[in-house]
Length: 403
Image (cartoon, rainbow, N blue to C red; front, side, top):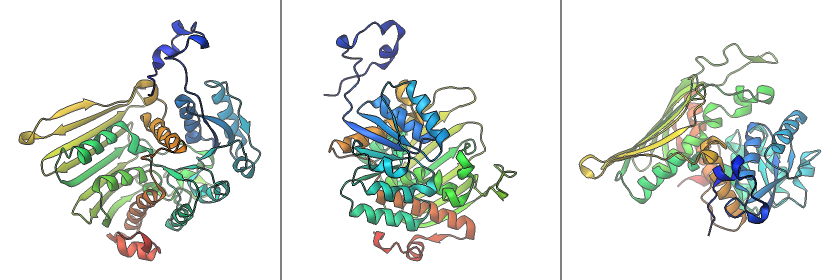
């Protein structure tokens, strides 16, 4: 039985007199796995904190090619953990440490494929941040390498662990609350890409393009909800506001900041996705409509007012049954730990797999499919033409994935 954690009281100043011998509700779980985090930028440090908050695995060591990133990670780590932390001198040392049980790869997108090759020499479990690669060729190679891998690779498509989407999956797929799904609509409105080391995320060559880098999350969710092979993708988008005056080493930024994407699926489901990256806050919406109801989820995170995020789900049934609207926001300590709690439950799934339990996390094949849709959308924007997915996959030598 999993013990309830009363984290508010556990961290309360009025409860600090409770000694280790008297801790029960406040006692952290015993960490049974040692992790090495490769890449200690923003997302790497998020994983370090979440792993410590969960407590079932401990951060054993870190590596980053930028010493300043490791300095920052080590400094911040000391604020919430008393565990010793090893700093590896190079990638090979990190990936060959016999004390490490699993690796988390959190490096820039364009380095994923090369870093993964080194980590896979260990034969140990690997968490690979999204997108799994920047090209379909590299993603395909990762899937094929994983097929022969003695352990497992989990892809960091953590939005499937956001509270509102977990509830949506349950309502749509288990309860079948909206009946047979006919249309899916998703949108994200948010501020521009944040600063990164070397500003790698301002360039398509390094990121894979905005719809690959950022929106693979949403295409993963849409693919799961549609539950069929995508047939056609049409997209319109471009760079309207963000980074128009930005250059790095004389090269201007070329990252898209808005897009509209339409997807047709083999089972008749039609989906659309809207992206806008020049807004003042973060807002996500999902609308799933079936032949007997509509489901709507919302997430609002206003960074300027410094308010916690709020996630809701509404089921609208009309004459078909009871309607409801529910706040499904995670507990505050978890919600604020990263990506509004999704990273925490992504770690739960990862450690469950380390413990030999079946997990619901993204596989490399699912990671590839999220990239197929995203890459097709990027291609559609570039050519201003609809993309036939089968033809697109043939052009990219992906014939093994036809359903």
